[in-house]
Length: 235
Image (cartoon, rainbow, N blue to C red; front, side, top):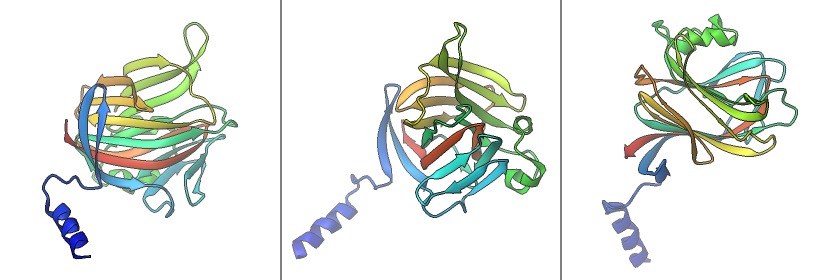
């Protein structure tokens, strides 16, 4: 028993031990170290979330379920994040969706001194309302390409102004499949990942240092899980 305690103590004191919250990831050929600062698996409800718009937003005790087939909704994480970071979550598009919107506002900040959460009553979820204050906007959805084929379209925009900064096309999302979506934020650069693969990246004209993250869904029935934000430790 004593030997076990000694081993545990040495492991605790060793400066080479990486805490359970730190992990390594290779992104676009770069080996990076992250430290988790926020995680939510939606098992404890929606106290950390604020929704704006007309949609059924609830949990089943394990996942966030968003039925916006007949409407639209923005769901803010109430926590503010800053600096270089990795935002991740799992998402599944349900087959009864009319569209396939997996969109996100990143590092959003309202110039109004009251802030985004305090002014929620002034918004009803209308898309253009979010183009009036600073944020990095990423839209991910299936759409017809120039040759009329359905493909995945990723657009990166800068607000205020809804300025298109970058656009990429890829293989369409499959309904019913769980995807792991990631956003590596290194202001003013943002890299979009799906299942670990880099899909799109852009360097914005504005450096947003802190703000809120918000899921954006339109005419889509989707399920979210394992929402995590991790700060960049080494790169």
